[in-house]
Image (cartoon, rainbow over all chains, first blue to last red; front, side, top):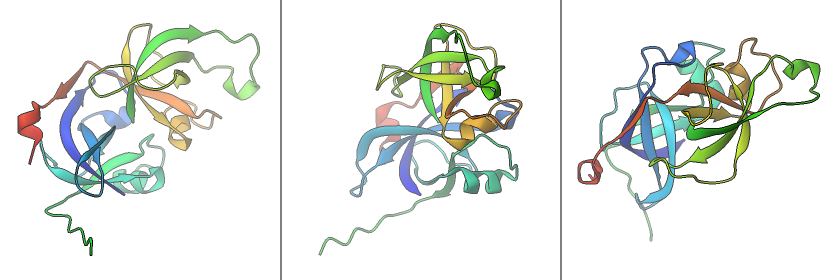
Length: 91
Length: 96
């Protein structure tokens, strides 16, 4: 899983049926220090994550299909948690 | 999934049988602000509705095949949907 921060959303009316009624979030990827890496991912929302929140993103298809309860969902990235804090032990 | 823009259509002269009914489009990946990022790639079009200039989102690896109908197809990148709009929150709002 990766850490990300919600920076936007995608509006789409023509799509695969699995996207119907789903929220597509734009999340920037974060490094160990919580800073943006420059990368991003478009992820399904399984949890109701909102703008600016740091989130846990599952980036693997089989687990994503399990969460969506659809073994043919063409989905790999899905927001599965909202992160309060990441403690980094540097010592 | 990532954003991309359709920059062309791929017309194959010959294909393996498994790919014969799959529309193939030439895609330039985009960053989240819509700027080109990385090398173009060929995506199967699961929506069958994307055309040149269209901004789309696409998925790679095994999930790509699942975007297609029929789904048991040997592809590695596929379009899942067409983008109407990418709403990016203002930077000051997304900081926490």
